Length: 420
Image 1 (cartoon, one colour):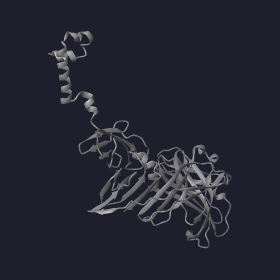
Image 2 (cartoon, rainbow, N blue to C red):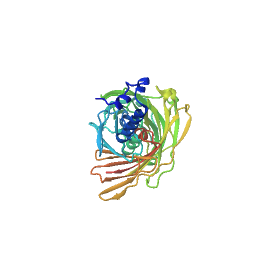
Image 3 (cartoon, rainbow, N blue to C red):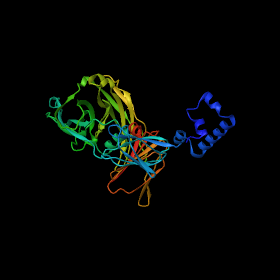
Image 4 (cartoon, rainbow, N blue to C red):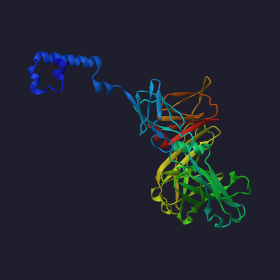
């Protein structure tokens, strides 16, 4: 049975119909209703008062949402939906697992929304085989001089990933011509999402020491580009086209100062964005004043291309990386352009702890660690870890906010320490 108070407060009793209840009776029912709300909470208002953390999970390599990932805390777990989103009670740390990806632990979170990347447990790769068209018809060089081409694939547009790959070694191929020219064939392994392979060409004077390139004087003379559709299949018999020399400018990258805990001097190289991926030019031994870089009108997509300056210093365990990105590719034919890059930051400091080490996260920075098949991300605080049984990549990147995916992709500076 519905009592009179329930009837009075129901949606069926409105306007004049309420007047059949006396004023004192209506007042007593209202007091009872308010007391009940304070005692037990009133529906959606109570639910909305509980703080939550919204976790968005993306693929590190593609940026696409990851559905059905398990997001766990000490109090329970949730599963990401088709948009890669899971909701948790307010937390500062959690872990994520999903088939095909490295497990991830996140800590030091201070906001109520966060975006984090999962690293695929196995990177998708393909092999590209081909040759540089016209390499064997380039002019012969005088004795003591040589022509050198280094061929690479484009990089996904992710500054932290580029730093890691450059520091640990990018797959590349080289061709060297002395005297009579010969054909230049290459084979590369590239990521399945990569859309282009490029060649950077220099000519050198060996200074009478052909086996020692450190004292050579180099001149940037050529550039070649090959574009294709992404995929997993083998690409063979590819033809990398040289851009005519009358469509090249010259770019010199001026790196900032190095750091106290990375012993080597920084080296600066250009980069180009082509189809939203980055062509990171190689560093060469010897002295190279500037690189030959194509003008925007000389290749397809050049109108949307941008110029980068990349600076890297590294020794056996530490490295530091900085980038100046998004500059207009407005150099003219035979024009020389200088690109200045910011000073490098200190490599992460490892503090020994019982059975392991600890790393403190500087303000406005993000800590990323790959260790023994697992990832760790810290937005603030200190991360303590056991000594790795296999290896550890410990990287700190500059940035701000709780979007770790964007944080890593757009970082202006990163530094790293490697344990092997």
